[in-house]
Every structure is written in structure tokens, then in C-alpha cells.
Length: 238
Image (tube, rainbow, N blue to C red; front, side):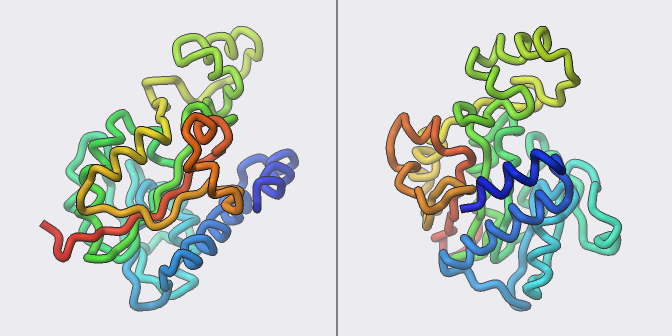
């Protein structure tokens, strides 16, 4: 369980590089417990990479990592890394290639067409390759991101109430760069995709309480951030 460490760190340091490094390392421990081997034989894609912290941690295991995002925000240490510029809502992701492991961390809630992305995600994976998908669902305590918990007033009014009361700059606006997602809908969609199989599901920051993801309604409120490990079961990519 890492939630208490993240909250304590954020209180004093906000979301500095160390904050995201803690998240990445903890997620990689969870991925490895799911049976995913990380070594120099593994090709990986850090999709929606941001500063590239997750991919950088993968490189420490010897993985061959490619980074992709809408713009190149990679850390100076990654200046020579392979990078694709891509808009996940507009561009064809199949041009990114295929990998043993694809990381998509805290990206899904920022996509206007999350189901289109999920429908194509299997094409990024080699046979038996896995996708690590982690995102903040709308009804979680952090569903509105910086204007939480005002998002519980609804996607039309929550951010406006925040603006009137807090009078602080806001990065996210519903249906502009933050889109309500629901765990039940995401799980149901993946189960309908014949080429995908969920290997593991848990609240990202307290995976010991994995049962929460399987409890309808409760999971929407008590899973702070949902983490899924999804396997491509197709024998070949089409």
C-alpha cells in the first residue's frame, strides 16, 4: 500500500519527479507480481509518457523502451530516447509498432474517445503481450483532479463551484481535457473484446484491496485509481 506515502509526499513536495517515481516503482512491482518479466529482451512503450519517468524506470530493468506523447516533454536524461509524437484521440496508434509491454498510466481519463483507444490497444501488443492501464475514474475521490471533491456536484457545475469558492488556477475542465469514466463500463468493454483478457485488477495505490474492483457501485467511489493488467490473447496482430 502506497497511498499514505503519496499523500504525505504530496503535502510537502506536491507532484515533483520523486512523487511520480514512487508511483512508477510501485506499479512495476505490481506488474511483476502479475507474472510479467522485465529484462533486456522486453520491448516496451511508455504511451502518454509525460516526462518519461515510468519508461525510465523500465530502462533500469534493461527493457528497450520507446516513448510517445502529444508533445515531447521527456526529461533531459532521455534526450536521445526513441520518441513518437501522437494524439491518441485523433491519430492511428497502430503506427507506433508492437511491444511486449505497453504502459498507459493516468492517460485514459484525458481521452475524449477512450473506447476507441481500448479497441485499438491490442494492436500495439505482441501475442501474449500486456497492457498496463491505470486511470482515475470520475467518481473516485480524485476524479476531478485539482478541483476535487467539487466534481461530486457534477461535471457541469463542479468545476464552476470550485472557481467561485477557491479562485485558484485550474488545469482541467470536464469534456475539454478531463472526461468522466466509469470502471464498470471499462471492464465491460474489455470483456467484450475477444482478443483481450484481464489478468489483474486492483486499486492502484492500495492493491491489497483488489476485491473493491469487483464490487459494483462501491468500486466507483473507493477505487482511487484503477489499475488493470490486460493481455493480448490473439496469436498474431492483424
